[in-house]
Image 1: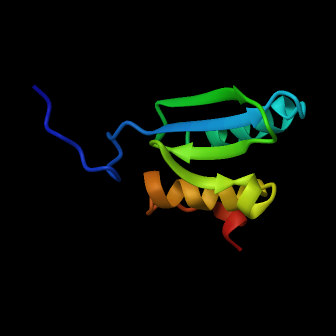
Image 2: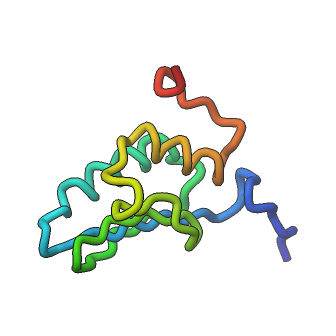
Length: 100
């Protein structure tokens, strides 16, 4: 039996979901953001899912918590989403030039 991990420990299992509108043809935007997150957090994430939706949806979730909703915040810049993901999965991680 393994010891439980805290949500911010490196061994914790973190899942990101990007829900995008298929009617609006936002798959390329969602896939690009997914690539950015997977490249930045390759050790911290166990899964990144793209979830087709409708009605203009573009929502990013980390471990089922909404961190970005296009309806409230507009389309995200990758740097903004990276910071929000980092704060939840690896608060000690530097984002390099993206932090400046």
